[in-house]
Structures are given as C-alpha cells and as structure tokens.
Length: 161
Image (cartoon, rainbow, N blue to C red; front, side, top):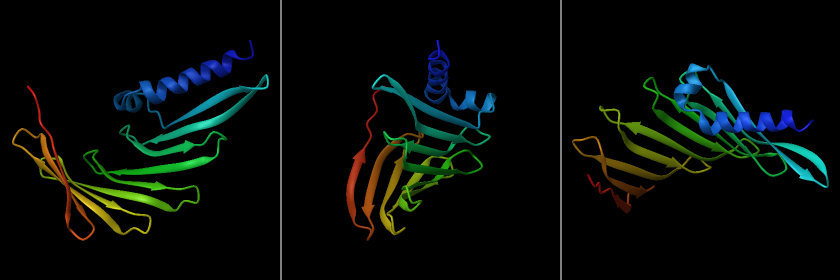
C-alpha cells in the first residue's frame, strides 16, 4: 500500500515529461517537471532524482538537468529563445557550472534556421554550420566549416513526395 503514492508520482512525472506537448505545458501553466526513480536495493526503496525540466511561459524548456545513477548532477542544458519562440542559444554546463559546449542559432527572414555556431568549453568557435533552404522552406543542404572557415562536411537532404 505504501508503494502506491510513489508509483503514482513516477507515472505522473513520466507522463508530464514525455507525454506533454509544448501546447499542454503552456495550457496547464507547468513550470517544472522532476522525474524520480525508485530502485529496490536489498529489499529497500531508494529514491533518486533522474531529471528536471524548467519551462518558460511559452512552454519551451529553458533548463534541463540530468542526474547520474546516484542522483548527483551529471549535466545541465540551458536554452534561450527569441520573441518568435525560436531557440537562439543552448549551453551545456558540467557539475561545476563550467561551460562544456555552446551553440548559437541564427534564423533567416523566413524564420528558418540558417546557421549554427558551435563553441567549445573555452567559448572559442569550434565549427559553423550553414543551412541551404529551398523555395518550399525545406533544408536541402548543411555545410559545416571548422573554426578557420575550411569546409569539412556537406550533408544533403533528399525528400520523397
């Protein structure tokens, strides 16, 4: 009987974090979701944090925390959005709150992602990706350049209709 509240809590948080759309998060004014895991070790319940998400008023995830198997912070992802709800920056930090990597997203006049700048832990430009968009608003190519501007990869997108 004492297991029912924990089971209900786990089911509810799992449903909220994976089953809730941005629209539902916004509609229900959800600010945070915490996922807990209860393991049964040696006949005893051991509950620990698994993840945490924080949302803005538009239902976008602004902070996401992952925990390791002991419940200690593993990594944190911080996201910023523009007035059109487009993600403009994502920063990953470690347990000491030091930047591991950072990506800056740029958009064209049609609000399509046109460029991604990837920075390393020292906040130095690591690579730059440029997207080519066709007249229908679909990505056709992604060109990735190293920090010195040398082309290192081209990815093509082919669509079947």
